[in-house]
Image (cartoon, rainbow, N blue to C red; front, side, top):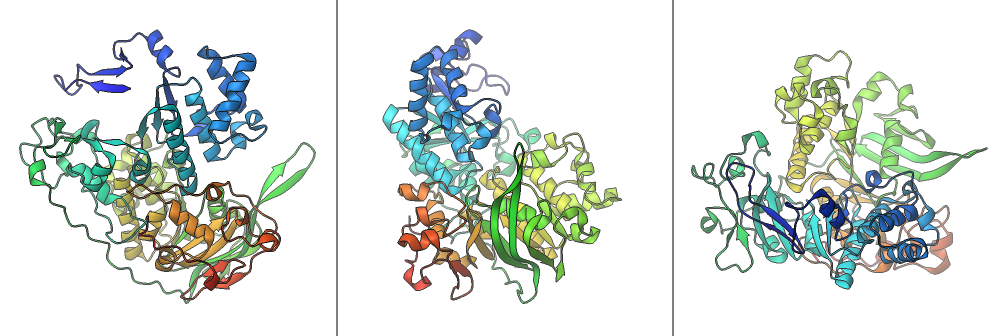
Length: 608
């Protein structure tokens, strides 16, 4: 296995540390020796498979190269090994090895990365945020796959993630880091149930709960590496700090009475009592009598160019939804369900082929460039990845000012202060900000024109739970202060439960259920909504989902798209006939052949 040995040496560098894999010290090894270990004895699964896989190489060729470089197999032996690897990671379909990465879904690409990591039969696999950005059912597939591989091959895994719910499903032990320092380690179940270090406790309290109830507790401040003291790195943000904490280095020490647990805090004996966590204040219900945004029968298609022909592919079947002033409508569903496509159609980045979009009663042009300046100003968009949406060659101030021509420095400062960033950040470049700070800067840019509606496209998916909590609190404050409406796209149902007033559930390009948030989580009616809630990670170990609920979605031109995965499927009816739309008691609508009373209501979200 892997061992990291040694204590803190003189200064901040921590000299004297060793990294030992199967008796080999990597810190002292030659570059040739390290290359021999990489891939052969240590596998690696990167966070973003889209950028990790060479787009010019077919999947089979990528695997063959890995086997050849490490001298594992070539020729027919390599082909047999490739077939075996792809089948083991759930990609046994005929011809999958001849596909390019862009022809696979995000979950399939991540499975290819896992196959590459396993190709040479390593003893250790390092997984760097392998499920970040994946929807909950695809997450469940990957976690189930990894558990099975670990059990079958006796693999050791170092799993790096900020998703505590995923860790609860797979980890035996957890090590918590803050600002490059290990602050607590211990068995996973014990650490998640009874965190000891103040940072661990704040991290877990920050995590949104699909079960509802407790609400979130925000960590004070944010990580500033330029302000990390010589002693405890967490001291500037700790509610229990003593004067000695900032000056006295604190090491991982065994916790008395807690077998296998270690923590780096001089006040552990004083902090074992649990701090009360209060939920957010109740939200005032928005007035839905006059919708701000009305989308009616919106159909969206992507153009496809062939060698001699041009055609289109249906991406979103006619969709209808409305957002009131000051309301948060969440759009949830798996990757590929059409959430971002629908949002891009609303903002005018993708032209709709059918239907209408009304804003304050006025019909909007299908494309953004044909809309008035006022319409473009009043509807803003925040993209998922601020690294890609902020110009890296321009300062934060210049990035923000570009949202409204003629903007002066005072308006930029006001926008930064609105998202709780120091005005001095205007002079910084995006790479000088943390991920959470960059996302706040992107929000500041969207707020500058003083919009009525912001479309938020998976803006929390790459942030850790404590930063997520601070951004959620920011959105709630902005909504209260400005009566701001949000169309909030997310695959994280725990976040949605905290933030949204209503939820629309998409599956394979079709809205299958809409409902008030409380009603949807207390008794989801559509079988797909039930499956989504069941798949959402919790901080306790969950049973594996049935294989039918983990099958890939398909966009159906006829019938119910969820029929192949539905446990309540009715023979040829669901396969061949479009389901009707049914009004639900208490508000909301459902697309299903079965009457609401005939559908088995899901167990409450508090059930495991």
